[in-house]
Image (cartoon, rainbow, N blue to C red; front, side, top):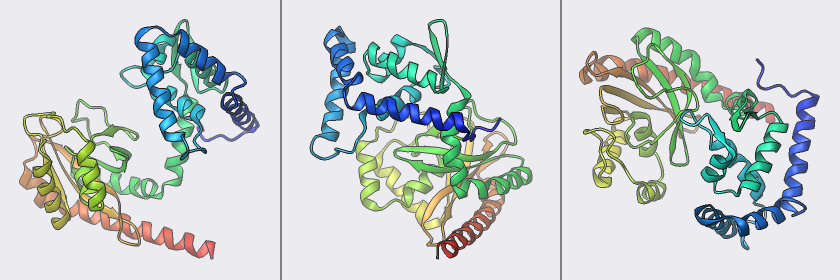
Length: 323
């Protein structure tokens, strides 16, 4: 299946979405319906929607006049589906997004018309066309393309799973992965999001944030104890991050999930900025920490160097093409 198809039907679908967005933004249907729905919404649902409208007003009032609320809400509808909730009713979508039932219904029907959502009885679910949204990012993000063959070689050498991730807001996001076997109960695939603080790749990326950004992250993040080994004290985490920055690599011993260890190092662009992290993970009962550091790390670092080199060459080629 070619999820990146840009045929005539795709163009007309995008135009339909743009028309629907314009209609909602200008109040010909969506704004009046949302206001009426909010007034009629009882109890918690009405409170949730009122809170959402207040948050949107804060973002748009006098500062963000180019912010398109309807697009924000449409994307929220897509994001409310997950592996834990692959199918949702209209009421569940409204509750999970903070939208009124009337607004949730309009967004669901619009997404269904465009092929992003399907329905069976009262249940709605995402359709494969949604993959096109993520495919556009992956196909343009050269680190993921460059890293994939190196990950596959590394996984074959180590007989363990290897991944590349980036930071997206406060989440660690997997953008490339080669699985030797499944060692985690968490299903890790491209697109998986995890908290960065208990992961080796996350610590590499946090360690190379500007100090002000790291401070802001630690202020707004509640670190939960996922296992008995998870570091949750901000001061202790700072020391671990400083050590990772100094050594050039980070390891985690059963902090994300009991029985799983991992080790990671940075991937840098041509300006030496850390843009991603690469790791290898293994089962604690099979691979001791010493093996991770003495045997896995050198191969991991070599793979990172090769990715760095190819990334720099690709960026240089692009720069010459522009000139």
